[in-house]
Image (cartoon, rainbow, N blue to C red):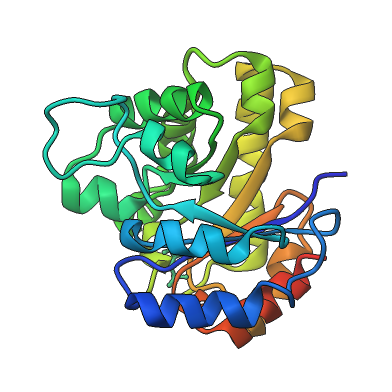
Length: 251
Ligand code: PEP
């Protein structure tokens, strides 16, 4: 039985005080880690404080990106070593906004996934199609190629620990959600890709989240699908009340 993982992606929102208030309200209200994994992926400047604030609670803190190098002349970048040193546990990699707005490639994502494992960070690897690709029936091929490239060179054991977030780009921040059945069909395809690419054990173990306008009103139906093991949530993760409802649904 795979444990659901509910991850909030705050994107470039909040100031420190607001972020701290959120975790103070949520940290002791989220269910125990044995029931569901609860993660907030916060902007870099808040990570240190939020990790201190959530120590010893089931609420985990993740980053939204990182560089694949450990250190060096990469002005403005943040390394996996820095994240690990702070106590970060998860890192979102290859979010469509990173790919579309900052030119991140499948190859970059693959390097970042390897760097995450090297530094004991759990990668949440985002994949998903554009509206045009969906309309041209290219969803499955596109997502398959993204998954294969992201996982290239990983051991079977590492593949088992990856979290894949299937996020149709047309559903992110738009209020449009994929139907639960359509989302499950793509997640099921991803699981088959993992099976062929790595092993049946890896396919059974890998967690596949859905992301794209998930909210308290639609989360139960999405998480009720056979191949959806959680959610990556933007807008509806910004308020503690709403985040707690999503996490509750993951129990
Ligand atoms: C996201 O940021 O990954 C996301 C899915 O956003 P939203 O829930 O707002 O669509």
